[in-house]
Length: 141
Figure 1 (spheres, helix red, strand yellow):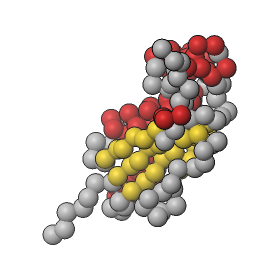
Figure 2 (cartoon, one colour):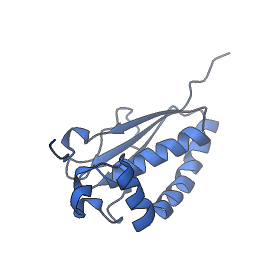
Figure 3 (tube, helix red, strand yellow):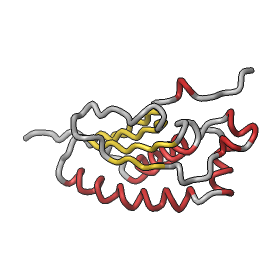
Figure 4 (cartoon, helix red, strand yellow):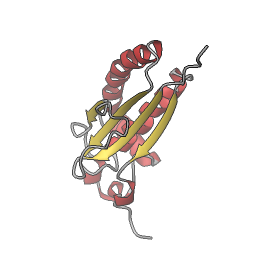
């Protein structure tokens, strides 16, 4: 009897300026969601120097944007594939989120979707990767 390996889901944020993330599996890259339709915190003073992982950015997205509706739709879409991939013993799925700089919107979306998958699909492995983190425009201390 062969043991099936759990589905490996890679969730990534990226900057459209730097291009789409590579797909090391050779399966074609999976989902790519464009976050540029969400209001950009980069345009609001000190928020520019934060990332989608910071509390102020989380509150900005929750209070001033349609990000939660956007993510609800994505959860519904990806759940179809995750359920199907698990049932069919597929080995990998990639879910990518892009925005202009890869620092705020795509990072927040990737963080939230990774959290959703981990809590709703405990049998899969989730890897979270922020491909543009070395270029984040952080305020110098």
